[in-house]
Image (cartoon, rainbow, N blue to C red):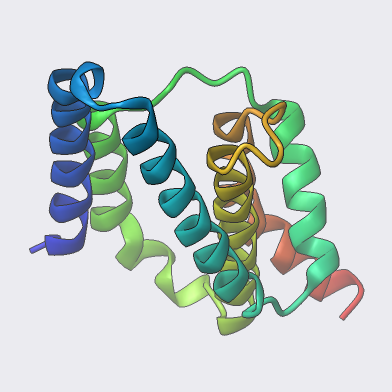
Length: 152
């Protein structure tokens, strides 16, 4: 049972609904407070994930190529569920080919994306479209494997 996936998707949908219903009723002070706290939380999560990196060069290259490929439409509840469920059910086919180093680089790329989201939420760096960075995530596996095979 993909409990984590269902929890994540449910949280996105519920948060979106609550945001639509209550967002206009919150004072500017509360909105700023929530954005700052969520931003700082994202910054910390990003740093923790980045510290897992195995090959920083592969993670950076994944970010560059992923950002170039991004014009991406925001992914919400149902499409997110479909993608996650496909990944969940097909993960058994690719699991034998995924190394701990690839997972470390994938985590680092996820950390960079999360850190960027935190910077944006905290209004430290607002000119980056975080969704455009999402193609970097699957690229991290491929580029990490190629980087390790070619360079070591």
